[in-house]
Amino acid sequence: MMCLFGCSSLTSPDNNKEGIEALRTIDLSKNVNNVSSLNLSDAIDNIKIVKLDTSDESLLSNISKMEVTENDIWITHMRDQRIYRFSHDGKFLNTVGKQGEGPEEYVGIHDFVIDDKKKEVYAISTLIGIKVYDFESNFLREQTGRWLIPQIFTGSSDRIILNDGQFILSQNLAINFPIQNPKDSLWSVAVVDNSFKKTKLFKNPIHVGKEDDIMANRAPEQEEGWFNYITEQIPTAIDYYNNRLTFKMPGTDTIYVYNSANKELQPQYAITTNESKGDFIKTNMWIKDRSDYNYFMIANYFDTKDYIYLVCSKGEQIMTYCYDKKNHSVRQVKRQGKIVARDVPFKDIFGKPHLNFQRPFILNNDITGGKFKLDYRSSGKYWVQVLNPASSDFEQYVADLKKSPDASQKQQLLDVIAKTGEEDNPILLIAFLK
Image: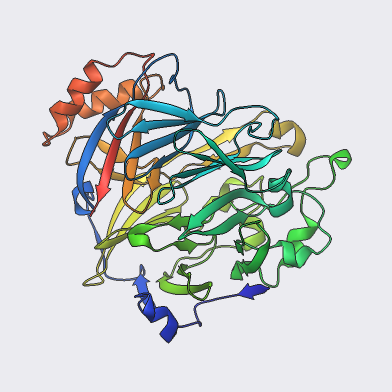
């Protein structure tokens, strides 16, 4: 079943049983108060400074995914595709699963999902499918057969979400290979059963009426070469705050909440602005001109108890908006970003460089000092910043931290940094949301 949705769909009585409020408007077009900074303490109760154990068994390089649950920290990284489990104090506990092609093993980790209630780990492999283990790495069952990922996804930025015992998928443009039923392949969110058969599909409303253009510019078969023009600049934004799963699809001005009782996406916040968004096809080409960034874009959102934060951009300027849920006021902080050009190999293929623009969510860290750049959000409770002593910007971070105003945990963080070597595992700043 394919569902199209938009802001005209209002809250139903069934939705209100889950405490879902009626549609609200976040107005960015007027009465926006420009401020010099937004403080992290507005959104969180406290920060835990966690130095991850460094040993031969737990040595990490580039972290590819992190999940923080009630008692544990779960990490995968690019070097060996294993799933690492640490305590909240940073103590290394164990790895999960075994690599191989046996019935209880996996070949590489495409993704992982943690079920903290059942104490289960879903290890997701592109080739092998999903294997399930307990927290101590004992094999429990094979959830799916082989070749799961190519079977269930047709786009990019694919993610598997476990919400209240139910699996939900998310994907974005581009379409990476020829599809027999093109319009049905252009879904953004899908509900699946435990065998990962799709039971309900939701399409990004901005794609409606553009399906032919999107499919005409998909990546063709391998022998014809890579020619994927249309791709969404950013993935679908997903938040779990207060046990509510919410989405904002690229190019849209609406935040939707997922109603697990009737398996519907319900609009909760409509974001209004007088800014121009530009032509969808042109601004979503993989190889873009610099002028294609001159339009207003809502890149991400972050839900908290009292506020909703929006990260937006126009040109190289990044705007962080803070919407107050109680009085509906909006504060704004502006900063400069940088559009980066990558010449190789893209320039040889397309005649011009590939442009990339990062829009991180940054708040003034008035608890441990410096700036808090959100790297991961987990379980609807935690925001995490990763301080990697081996990274190129770590030295600059420390210098800026020392010059920042005093904060209650600043010296504690500096003491941990002083005892951390370049070869050590990262330091985590785990912020606990109010």
